[in-house]
Length: 358
Length: 281
Image (cartoon, rainbow over all chains, first blue to last red; front, side, top):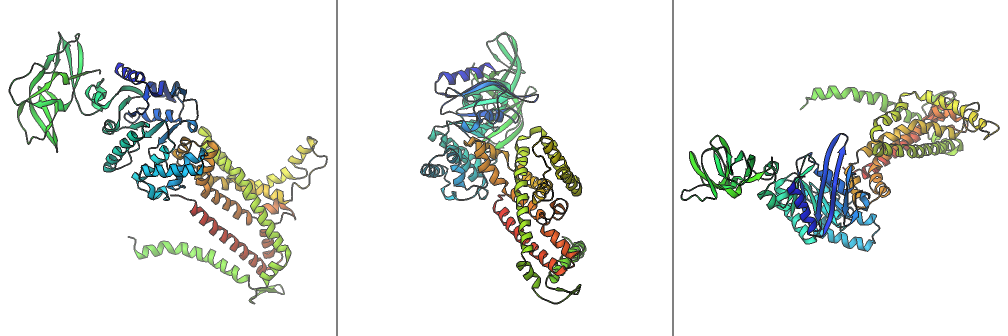
């Protein structure tokens, strides 16, 4: 784990109200290390997302918390009790599965009532709580339908109700929106977020979609090859990526490779003052941090350069330029501007060039 | 689109086959059941006496009832063996799954007769089991009732039909999506609750198919009673066989066959309805 991820994990624990503690957890399947020494604290009421490519170990971590897998090393604690040693059915954790996993032989109502029924809750209480849960996800009118009669979005809602009716301390969501089409997905994202605010239940959300992670989460834990790359709020992780991988995975960026010598950073033809010992270095510069320079005075906190436009991709409100700056290709995002060509002056603020680890 | 000639060419042989070797024999059997035997010859004289004999002479009803009792016992025994076996293989066998599956299937390659005779040498009064019982001083005299009894028939048929029960149940269990099992545990159900509320209901079509196999195949079996049944283990198929053979009373044999056919067809109809009721695709 890199330093920035560690400090972020500590931040959550010092804030108090820690719900879940993952302590040095590793998971090995055969000869493959799927998770390596993961430590992560999750605060009560938090919406935290495990983000990563397929094979990064995010689903495995979720399954360890749910209890479907056992860690090879390390411990998981919840509210001061050891969690990883108790079977899944005794954990106050519920899961929304990727393909919903609704019971096909039970009606929507029976699906939602399942958790309460196996815990021998009284019939009157089951009735009330199931109604309430179905209302919460606006599925009352489908209470007597079979899951196979429902659309993907509706099944998704039932899966949510079925999990939430048990009032879990922690709700695990395993790519719950990945099977929905784009529009429905956006709608479900905002409903999920609203629901989480309203209920105050801690959500541990798994996705490979960085936009979804940014839109929903209080914090993002970015996983790479079974290790935590960075844990931070979406704004923090976007504005201050710790590594080149993070910078590229979350949003688009320009990676500037160069060196620092005599307190001057040099990346190709770009040069600016940078206080640090002499070393090779990588900077991340977001496309929207670069603007076209309309002329006038250049501030000392800015870097100005001349580049020729190679390509222009129109995207409605904004457009993306690919510009050639002394042989180095840079991406520049500007407000929709109209066709551009030839050479232009560009400028970016030195503070926006974030030094990242390779 | 296929041309009419093509359709005609591909559909005629199977239709001809079904007509000649299925429908025609059934028709003949049906007709025979309403004919009579006079002076060692079948006369085409339409009557319902065969059915009357069947329902008034207690011997036939007795054998029919015994046959159904045996078939029911075989069904229950092979379900009790086949279901746990299929459940274990599907959910808990892990890496040994393939090997165990093959071990269940292998007996199907051994001839029915060989397996029947094997039981004869095990159950006979000079057989392996009696030898063992005497060696252990559990009995002084060989137990004669082991062989040539309904018990022996149930034992042999259970041995033979358990793989047939196992296979559809195993297929049904394999088709249960594993996330459903995880979802059940996740919602607080322990293993027993998960089995009773999720796995068992979702495997009912396989269970019904297996039970139907065992029941129908046992009901029509005549080899096991012939080999190990003796007089007390005679089943309805043996009666039919003797009526068509030595007794030369084809009309009565046909009447019994028609009754069994009606029984089996209604049973198949019923289980199919039930299987549909319990399948959720």
